[in-house]
Image 1 (cartoon, rainbow, N blue to C red):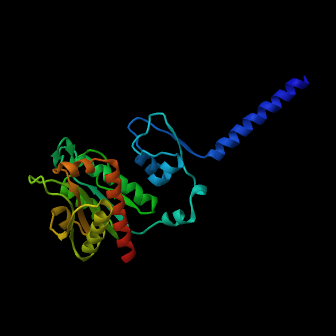
Image 2 (cartoon, helix red, strand yellow):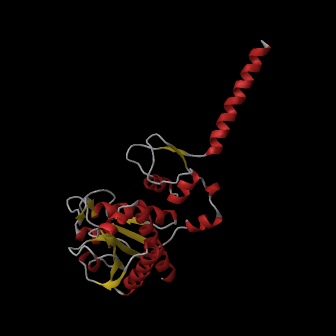
Image 3 (tube, helix red, strand yellow):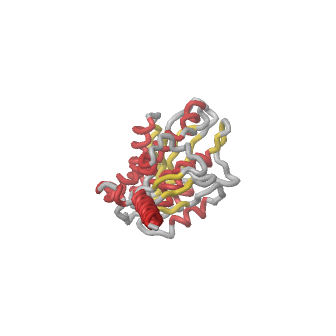
Amino acid sequence: MVSRVFFKKYLTGVLVAAFTCGLAMGLTHKVKKAENLYRIALKYGVSIDRLAAFNGIKNKDNLGVGQVLRIPSGKDVSPAANAQRTPKSLRVIIDAGHGGKDRGAVWGGVRESDLNLKVALRVEASLKSRGYPVTMTRRSDVFVDLRRRSQISNRYRNCIFISIHFNATSHTGVKGVETFYVGKRGRFLAKAIQNHLVSNLKVRDRGFKFKRFSVLNDTLCPAVLAECGFISNSYERSRCNSSSYQAAVARSIVSGIEGYDRAY
């Protein structure tokens, strides 16, 4: 009889300890088919870099179905990170160019529309982790006409519009990045993004330029269109198609946005 009582108490203690340990470990997420680190980070409102570091992930594109990720809690966030997530008043409209039946430029099996969306999702996750409200013109491989893209942006006040693209030309030796804008504030934003792109990507600086693209001209808020590299150039296409390059593009765009936000 004594041994049974002892065993029950022992078992209860083990279960309580396990439960307490589970709570201490915090929230977890089991990776499902077609999920990636960027979507998971976005779902839980944490930055991609923090989620990767918290789980010891070096290759952010190498997640396995069924893999269990630990989600950082507020206790794991430094005061600086908490400050970063202070809600911002500036809304950012992220426009992943092309999509669906409109593939954009296609070179060497690489579709511009796919690259645009990959970078756009990275920018979205990074901005949200910093407290910015974000609206996407598309979040999957769907067609959205140009007028609709501007209409989405024109619903909001105090916002900026960033259209993300990759470039191409029949002159395959051409390389580099360039950013287009309309309006005075658009010029400031374009310059900020262009400078970060050139600095972070170590590519040819093709400048920031005024251009009345309809998706910019029909948008009421400050608007820019970033051409993030030439996929018609074999060397640059290889870089554009890499995860590290896309991450650097996203960081550059976010840095440019933060610079604009501080100025205005």
